[in-house]
Image (cartoon, rainbow, N blue to C red):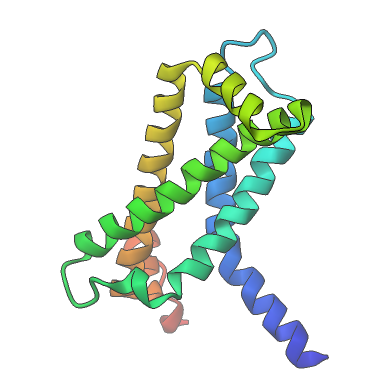
Length: 169
């Protein structure tokens, strides 16, 4: 039981940073998508779906990060790996945003084709592209920071950023 608890606690600690970051990102993306509505699109259902998308994305970020194909550019300047990972993670994030919009429509129409047609006809394309650009830039920011922290080391970044040196204590 102790090993299982330690494993779950370690996984939760690893999943917390990307999940919290992308929870904020997906909630902001939800607001961008629904700014034209009188209520600004803030409903419990939309908030829950943004939270679920962030939980899924945070865990997928960690799971994919451990795969060999994600580290194709190991040993090269960090920008190569950062751009590669940003592209893959952005596709995942865009897919989650699409699912967040299309799943309720599938439920409403009981089929994918009419749901897809409604989605295409009701999509406000400038908002769509603003949303996906926001996701892309957010993923780039998180990935660049993660790559840099991994290269420099957590303790060194903590010291550089906050002036705190845990080893000195």
